[in-house]
Length: 227
Length: 241
Image (cartoon, rainbow over all chains, first blue to last red):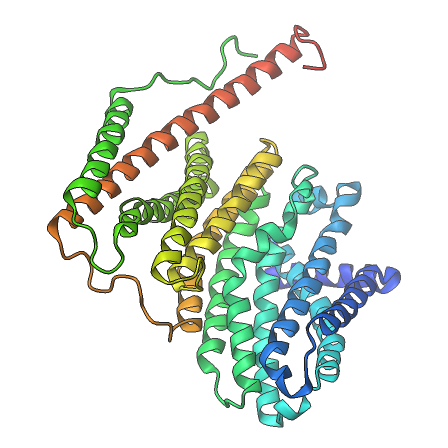
């Protein structure tokens, strides 16, 4: 049995190598993220001085929607030629496959957020609502929230390996489960824009969510897939 | 190849009929007590009586979802067909109960709060839980009956259990300053309390009967699947059946 981290790194390097040659997922996720930002800005923008009240919702919905798009493709490379069958047969810990895919998803989400969130700041003129100290808190909130979305998303994106389950939309499964992260993220961000320095209770909630579900995911992912 | 299907459908035992009779009797009793013996509530009036139905539905929904999560967890640890049938049945009946709770809730809220919907913690929790298990039933209904579908749905139900707590915390903090309109003092009148608990018992028995029946149905479906496969292997069945 190779260790979980070794397997994770192998899966991660494989997927990133495929991506570096095809650039399909990153292109899809990035362009969707940017377009979603544009659509939300056109729909919701009211006035510069009240942006702080509703822009948090825009930031978090763009992050959630665009990362869902990445999830749709996360196991795509394993479907062709029954590659996943190969992974199941290999004498490896399936936890490693989960961690590897989780890292892939986090990479795509992170790159997407690095491009879309500055754009939200620009379109909604959010710079007057922020200072350096609170920006770091916002980044922490976003990092933990993205991790939460990815933990749940990666666990259930595996359902797309089944031909029949592909007919059920992934968001139907993922969105109700991530509602605590969404609420905590939006409310925490709103407090930061309103000038509150400490949003530690919301950060704690997302942190607890991440820990609980990372534990559950590591425990049940192998059981879900290896019948 | 066996001559008889391995999945046997049991006949309905005495306990089933006991719950059936209890559900029917208690429902009538709860209705009678709620409408004729319990007094009309002072501030809300007659509309308060919906609570003898609404709250038991919401309670049995949560209980059913917890059972579904536990049965699914058991199924992931040790795959037994009975646990899987219990999980499907509780999830579906739970969605039904959630639907009852979420339709009766706004009817009451319009009269008591002046709005059909408020982002009140318990209401929000009920809504999110109902969505979660609608997803579970969608997976089971459209995903066919293969093992991967059962296991992924089981994973969803297991993930649903901590969500009950996490969603509750999130919505309470979010709407924490919201005035608590819902009875904080509880039921003061003894007849109201009796009517309420009769309602809980009636809906509880109904939930048990429906779950039982749904899980029998699942067993029957599995048996039919198995027979069909058997007949196909023996070339006794038209291919397009």
